[in-house]
Length: 135
Figure 1 (cartoon, rainbow, N blue to C red):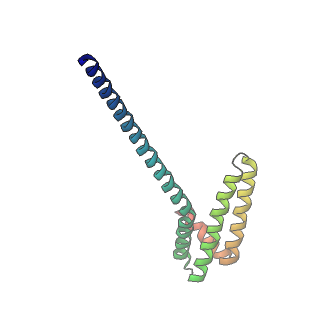
Figure 2 (tube, rainbow, N blue to C red; figure 1 turned 90 degrees about the vertical axis):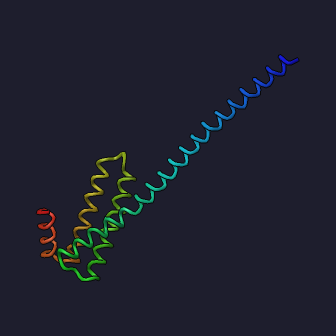
């Protein structure tokens, strides 16, 4: 009887140890999954904010270099923000069609150039191009 009792106790201890080990491993996996999930969410939030940051940076830089007033600076920001958002959309939509993607991006570049030329005039656009070239 004692032998069976000892055997059952050993079996129960082994079962509890195995169960504990499984729980610890599962908790580590859960921790890893949660960490990865938070990381992915953070990356997505940062990626979404990038077009705004890029547009703001360009608008600010152009404002300083070309002495733009607030209205012009705001217009440059809008043009650049639309550019980055459209560009992102084109890249996503035409990922597997590099030639079409290239054509669409070139067309977008021409559109942005013409918008900036209409807003700033050719002289200030030349100043900006010169500044960017020498930067």
